[in-house]
Length: 267
Ligand SMILES: Nc1ncnc2c1ncn2[C@@H]1O[C@H](COP(=O)(O)OP(=O)(O)O)[C@@H](O)[C@H]1O
Ligand SMILES: [Mg+2]
Image (cartoon, rainbow, N blue to C red):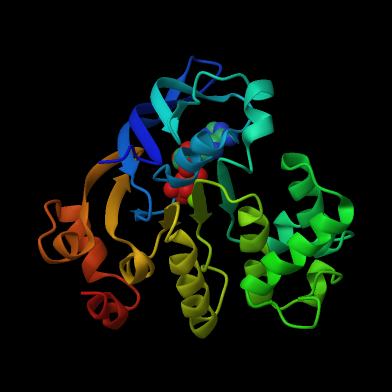
């Protein structure tokens, strides 16, 4: 078997507090193979986003990886300094967040952000980078002859902005795509379109899909991991997890999934 795109072993994340460090995530182990989509589900505050931030090297101040290892595309990255990490971010991992309006700079065009990212990681002329940006946006089915490359974020619909965010996350062809609640702010029809896009884009990389909504994970994930209170409760292939959950909390999640019909359609 080829090595996993992502391999997280016994990860602990702590925040520094006046009384001493407090663990926010404890003993998290997961791995993602090439072509695989892993869903991480759990209620708000269970540690999903912090785990993603640790993998992407985006932990906030005072929060740090205090134990365990993170291997990304065959390289151990948790021990790297921020300065060593920065040049590869965007190339080894691309991240899509819930709200692209607040992730995009409102006074810059979509294209300028894609071009900047492409130029940071690849030796290209501005004009080549622009072609690359248009191609990337076109793949995400952004409308218009130039695929909205000269549009400002507010000129796009919520779904289009999320497509542009995915284009930005993928422009340097990262080994791993992390999507943190990528469809939570979108209406159901658009949600399904974005999930279909993510599924397509995960085919030749690894994908970590974070969601509080089990039916979203069930729709496209090969495997699902359930988190609660900073710990992993259980993980397994999607159909096994939905039909034979081991943990009572997972049973509750299944029973209360907002869209039981799409949950069942995933089986
Ligand atoms: N910068 C921070 N400082 C202190 N605690 C934090 C910080 N960020 C998140 N937390 C806490 O860590 C826990 C996990 O947060 P998070 O990973 O954002 O949860 P989720 O994404 O599952 O909703 C929560 O209890 C949250 O309050
Ligand atoms: Mg979160």
